[in-house]
Image 1 (cartoon, one colour):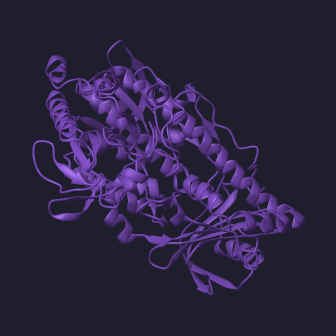
Image 2: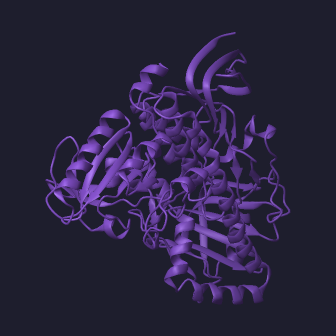
Image 3: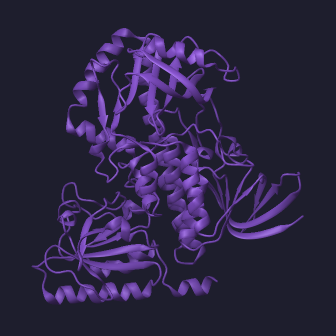
Length: 549
């Protein structure tokens, strides 16, 4: 039996596991990524990348290429028919990616794998996790290879991203078929002939059921159908193109002919939410932690964001740059998001299927949806929920402890997503906050205006410089001016080019903001004396890395 050592073992090389591995490597932490498949998946149930996932993938320099390869849908129509549209439009999300990007999971995995290789990582294939045992300071994972040979891998931490077939998650929770969705649905990736509106993702319902049409690259369209007359057929039964065509003809209110299927199958949704995403040194992410009814493309996106949230925290703890208590925030933050996402998926599916089962409900709900979605507040709420740009961690113990009391109305506070600010340096506008975040580390941002006294500004710069030295390699500091000239120096000075820090953050001269590596606000303070204890929840000084080595 062979024993290997690594800092973090990641199980499962789907989008969640690949994201976890590249985020660990981005922060300089060794990991081993294993997958029981002998090759990447050729068929993908996940098809849509939401705006928040694209914002996070931008931190790896991947989003531009991904967007070029995908199909940009500005939103979706939840109306019962074309005469009563109920459009949810993603430009209300406030993201630099104001759309739903339809792209096959196969393409997403290919892009993530290329980035993994660039960072020096790889996927060990045909390696199946059999069991894992924990000791005080390590996890011992038993793994079998392609010929059934067995080895033991010792890691400080294990992230289970192995999906719905997770060996470990069965011990921590149950997988069940959703009570809302008792039956099978149809999926087909096909070419379509006819007058299909290729802008929005189209959803249609009538007495036969509900059907979604998602255009994606190479002129293909994904058909997802909940046909009430066919939901009793076992998911193991073969599915023929003629069966899908008959369902399309019965539900879609305009003629479409489908042909040349790349993938065609029946599926049965499962429902899982583990009671906790952590058991000591074992963490669960993606479908190993939660499974949803596949509505509004939440599953893969939630998994990618689980991975980001966890991986940078593990990296900082492994490097001795953060207290181990920071790992408690993973379950505190993401489990609540998992619950909220399940409620959203259930709500949208219930609306979708109830429209199919009742003509009266279909007519009334379409009317009410159309009226509600004509208002900006509802559009903001729905687009934020669907794109996941509305995800925040205000509910957590750490955020509650570090939230600034009584900020300006609507101002960003601890636990909130930080928008991608447009700043300027000596070369002019075009410095984006998320571009600054691409370099590993936290950002500590001080704010001053032309009315800030020279004495206060000098003191702020001195304190930022001191903290940047104390947390060297983990913390970069910037001063942002409301007005004036940006400049270089040990602490660079930038300009709030669009006054976003002033208006969206509600910043006042003397305020300091700590932005996490995943683009959320750790805390804000107007008291420089509070910085050391506030930072202590997130970081350890640079010398701690040597002490922990």
